[in-house]
Length: 284
Ligand code: FPP
Ligand code: MG
Figure 1 (tube, rainbow, N blue to C red):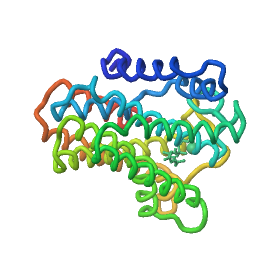
Figure 2: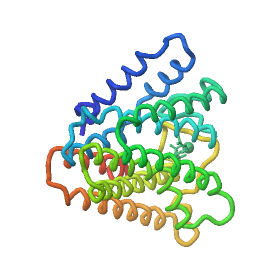
Figure 3: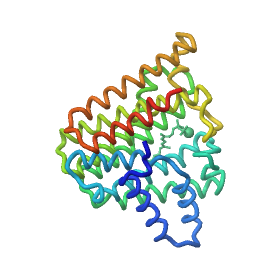
């Protein structure tokens, strides 16, 4: 799968470089935004938004600003997450606060959130509501994540935490795309649930890779509780890994089952590809 060749990937990259191009080159904020936006990343969430719009009858060119809003709020959340968990390396390069300092990084996150609100604002009530709710969920989920290493944090707490901090933005990407494509609440709800399953599977995989120490493109001072660590209280390391992988496969099955209810087309096929690419294809 060569996602960089996809039309949706080219659209989001070009919208991002147009945004940076339009900013004052001499400002410190532009330098920070450039650092964050040019640090790679697969652009899965904005692509998911555009593809969800396509499977609901929309044209991805018309949803690109909403897709950029999703990518920018995602970037802001990573900057703030790195501030909270002492992230040193993100996507193989220094985190924003390592490079520019704490105050500047926090303000860069604030700028990105504000810019994302500007970008999502023309897309109507449903899109704006889902966008706002995702932001609130992420902040709540992160609050729970920060406390995950204290006291008792069980499987239920873990799922609640990752549903909010990670899956909520995937869910909003898919539902906002659906609304922009012309979907009603029922179809947008199906897309939202699809995104939630993908985001849940994605975070379990990310945590599993962290638990197994097989990630080399990021490094943090503080680590959160992971699913295999919770299972480890009741079973062996091998069983904890196996059980976590089964959970990923279950979430991916649910996600792909939802996609199966849409008429098959190039865009549903691409959604299946990105779902697998960021989840089961990443498994060790
Ligand atoms: C990464 O988790 C972090 C998140 C998925 C969400 C972070 C959310 C916030 C800081 C709230 C911000 C809210 C808004 C509206 C911007 P991780 O630390 O497990 O993953 P990592 O290994 O990639 O750091
Ligand atoms: Mg982190």
